[in-house]
Amino acid sequence: MASEHERQPRAPRARGFPRGCVVLLNGYPDNHLTIDPAMAAHPDRGPEYQRFRAQLRQLAFRELKSLEDPDIVLFMTACLGDNDEDAAALAEHIDIARVRNVPFLSFTLECDTDEMRGRISAADRLKSNRFKLADPGA
Image 1 (cartoon, one colour):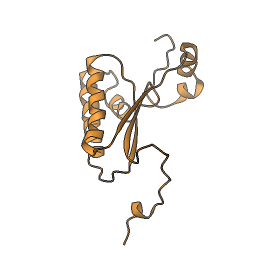
Image 2 (cartoon, rainbow, N blue to C red; image 1 turned 45 degrees about the vertical axis):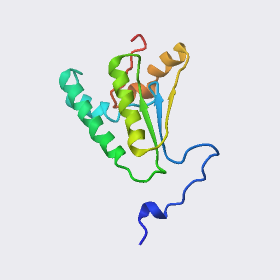
Image 3 (cartoon, one colour; image 1 turned 120 degrees about the vertical axis):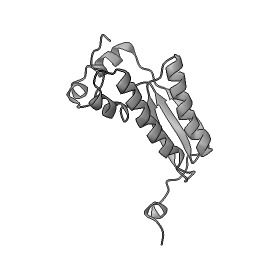
């Protein structure tokens, strides 16, 4: 009997686009899957927060590395800058693609400073129950 995953129709592949890959969108698009639980447990963002967030990320990334279907496309988000800590985080993302033997595609998203300030202070962002930056002066 076919599994639920095997019975799902597959979308046609765009010409030149790999079936399975890891796509990293860098630049604040939504990187809160490991941040929010860590902030709930340790809102001061101290060493305990950093340790717990690293543990959550390691657990999630270990599971992503174990995915056997080579056609799965993983869309991941991050907010990585030009420093040693973020370079290590980028290496963790790249390692998922390496272990799964699929291409790694990385895109850094940018927008105008005024647009970013408007997005940061938008009403829906301020009402969100997530731990997002909301100070346009930061």
